[in-house]
Image (tube, rainbow, N blue to C red; front, side, top):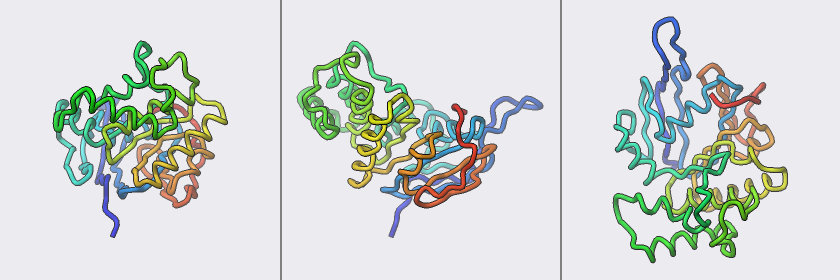
Length: 244
């Protein structure tokens, strides 16, 4: 029996008020089960980035409910959301978001410093970070800084950082957006490998060929889901566009 990791009901997000109010999300219902690989697509203004921010506990909905791994996170305050992010979510961004003065190893160790529960000592944090880097094929790049790594290698460091706290969910926002085609293929192969190991992945992308790697493609238009297809068959047209 499948078990939901993400469940949202009647999710709404409104920016502004009155005549200038913008309804970024308009009553979204969505369930993503554990160990699924889902892609979210949509044109600029569709609400995909707004939805990703709420799923990532970076923002709260105006209305509606959100359960993450069985926990109601809809009305948590900023500190509580930060704790949920650290425990339950690993983020992979288009721009990598690595600290330039830190080595790959120290970049990956950072999330471990913010664990509120089961705090690890320095040796344990280093051991966990080394294992994460080795799992993405960078065991020989531990002391390299970001400017000493290729774009694809930097994204691998970012994925290792996302994995180091062993969260049940990886949120990838345009993970191949700054990469050449070869590096993009390598990153998608890595995400596939993580998925086969049971990691749940939700990925925002505007590229149909990248979205086709997912088990299902969820297409947004004007803040609502207009299609949700298996094996990349989303019927999502006009998906190219920037963030919302």
